[in-house]
Image (cartoon, rainbow, N blue to C red; front, top):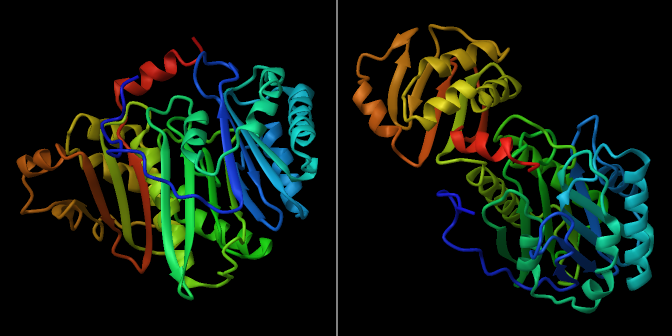
Length: 404
């Protein structure tokens, strides 16, 4: 597998988070001889929160997690994730697979089934061979380690070309508070909650309702602002566990919230940088909209436009396609007030191409690996940012052969 040209130089050195351990194994769910299942064991006293896909056809795993988080309980917890099969659109068999996995983890760990959270990612509509995973549960339990989060990141990959991880440390009351997270995602990426699979762990102390409110708020301006192909998965899940092992309460702490935001944004960007077939990372900044909601409409219409994305892939500064995206977005817009910039280059204003703009300047800018498109609607104070990638022949190749 060729690693994305936008990949980070290396996987980060993730710290130990007191109160949680990990293990990964090769269960052969779909892939041979590679890690494809991970188990995290989380200490008593941990707050667990999450956000999930809003898809009407979401998986049995997602529905089970949502039910459990709607009535938070106490005690140790566990998260088990497999790749290669999404356990989505599998009817009652899917529910049975979730139940079997929760019972299996409970049997080897003693953790209550109501505190066991599952996720599956991969092909839709095929029964999950959960017996293969259950056969690995004792080994997953017995090989738990506090430094194996990197193995977990590898185990949740599907078409990803690199494992995704991020970490932040923030000093609060003279003590270091650590946050570490992993993500998977490459295709079927469009914001409608938290996109893909994301697992974040911290030794901070925070009550579950406050943690839930915080992660929902930060998700709205990180994972909910990315798109690769405008398709929302049936399995998207983001979960965060705060073990409280540090003894430091971070409720309402601005430094902690900033650190969590930065980590979530970093992981979100890594998903876009691993977009299937991607060669360019694209930031869409919208200002001057009638409202933030209108700005988001413009940002996402531009980020999701196949015409905009293919022009970027071809390094064509076709600003007319941005004008098209603004017009179709549904946001209030005025042709004569709109301005467009590629990076710092003024491309269009006053209802026409800018007098200072040259096609050569635009073409040179499009050769960059990181592209920024700035759109100002000139109406009011509404702003939004979205992140996407280009659309290349590589995307078609990957998805045409996905089930082969």
